[in-house]
Length: 292
Image (cartoon, rainbow, N blue to C red; front, side, top):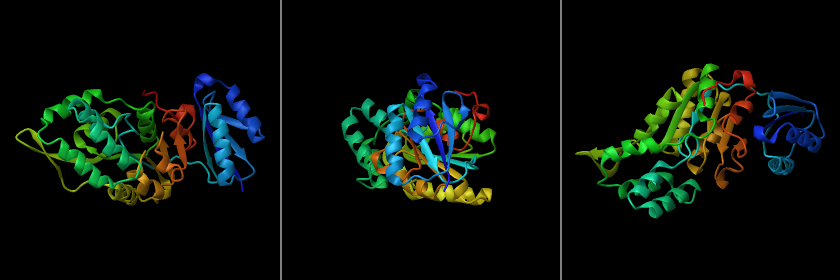
């Protein structure tokens, strides 16, 4: 069975790292998707799980991320993305907790949830309860601390340019998600809303709560609306509450994903930025938006 192997590296490492990878694979026959950054190897053999891990580990020493598939590369019709530690670099509730002197307590709950050790919905309720009495305008000010993951805006704008629908779905708060939606250009956003009374957070969430199940439902609903199967969708997440949607997507990816995702995603971006997810769909440099 033939395999498509897409290698994406940091441009600063140069062409030589791809030549070294070709030597390890046993083939120097590759096409540049972006010179010095991404290359496509079309190989007349398949890779078992052990071989993929071994080759991925070797590529990592060269500063290269690998995406290996037996299916043809295709530009997906739908992008469904988690927000925190995926499209943006931080967990916003952790940042809020730091400002309120609750950093350790909230960060511990976040970590347990993202690694699948406690139920996400329960963990979110526990964190939200700790914020009771916080002025709502404090959340608005915190939006100024949002840091976007390298390549995130290019990923969204390039897929939209190619005709894909883009959806941001997060267990985080809507005040942050709306700012991210506007900055990246997502078509739609689904997020959680903290309850507010007299300008203060009550410590509760306005139902319904966006959970792991919600994320999968959003992906499946968007596919139905587009008239395509989930095989034509790309999903990106970083933690345990993303597993349900990642499992049904035709292309599943993570950015420095938690260990719990290692055997779930098709592609974990470690050395590259999020434009790597475009190359994994067969995009070339000329297809990618210049938006930073």
